Image 1: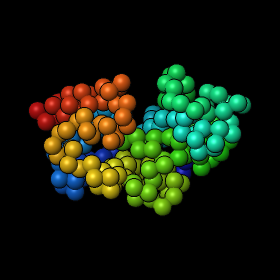
Image 2: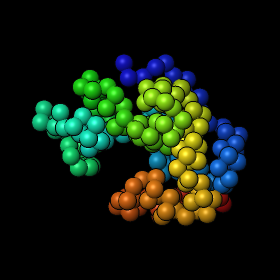
Image 3: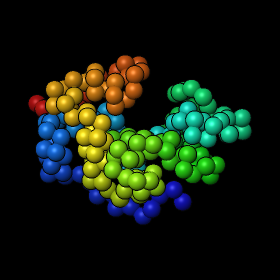
Length: 195
């Protein structure tokens, strides 16, 4: 089984306020990230963390061992066409990858309401990817704590403080962030939550 028993406790306004104080940014900035990354929630309807499995990372972590046998799970370059059409299909992809190489699969997925990649577990505050995944399964509060650690350990707080969405998106989502308009989506979500 991929996941531990979970308590899908939702984030409270106080949780957002405390996280914003730790970073030094507006609550609206954190809420903007939640909306853009996960449409505001950390769990799917069955109570599992929202995930997105990235086959190009799985290819990298397994050195292509499954690229011939499982070409929709392991491929050398990012390819959106292999994403699941819904959360059930996406969870099935991750489950199948776990059956091939558990650790590589957990490292190759983004987790929870902030969609932090498993390979970022150390900067999110966890020694192992399994500890990180277990925490992502516990509550949205744990997901928020991981996000704050990720932001602070990567020196991204100033971008949230300044609402510099292009620089934030470039560091948080990668250099191809403009393809998905992450910066403009973050700006629009921030405007909504700060009004």
